[in-house]
Image (cartoon, rainbow, N blue to C red):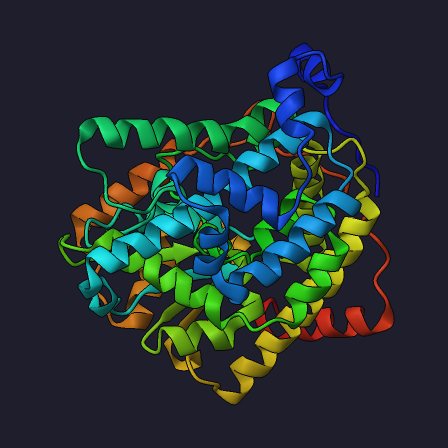
Length: 412
């Protein structure tokens, strides 16, 4: 596949040359469990050993595998290392903050997450815009970027809230400033709706790390691990965010749920799921471009063919499993909807009305008008829109067979 990173600002080259001392000095620190936990301990005024005890083996194991992979495999730039140290530090600090909050207010774990609604499908199938449309329904609650990055404790006042938004905005926008073209592919900010996989990253079991870094040893571990702790953390974050707030239905979204549908349904037995579908070849080309661009914010060594092979195997397997689930009526399959990307592009509100009708929910006219207004405000073919090479890596026979089976089921 043809892909090349876009131009970078001059300051990025200066940082990566080591010319900016404070960042270069911080970036030089090794990626180890001890380093990450010592940094979090210093920030919180705790002993590093106590921090590691609190995290426990369930989190320390994937953190150790991830940090080893970052050091040995990811080939990060100076700026990439600096960004990643801050990223991992924030995850550990927030994990500890969640534990502290639960100790102070144990009733939070009794919060009921009723009929959460998940939007999922392969990347680049329209999950983001559908999620944005559903956020226009005032009966729904959609997590914002700052909420998923800094869920605990609840903001103490307006000044605290403003500080969190500023810090979250800095973290989310930094890769977009470094990697030319990333904003055109997928924009992130503190106050925009955010993919809920960020909640799962708090226990170090998340595709978020794979999207940012070349970490094959971590990938091997992630694909065989139990994702139940990741969804338990996901639920806890929602419980903390909704504590003492008016009850509204959560609407979440991320492609990663395709890979762990059993764990999702086990965690949320009354879940509703809306799947989005698109031709897999277009999906693989687009997601490869997205991930390659994201990784280029952290490393000068990005292999789009390796990224394409990884996603071809990942999604051919998960989409094939979705066919089996749909045909056999597995748990949760009776509370699902399916829509195609071309249908949504052709008449988005018809798709939304169909989804609401499938679930037996009303869609008041004022809400439908708000949704239509949101859609009308979305840029169409804007300058700098995402463009990518449609030639993806060759698929093997088994992958083609699985994707053909998926097409016959959901795209015919």
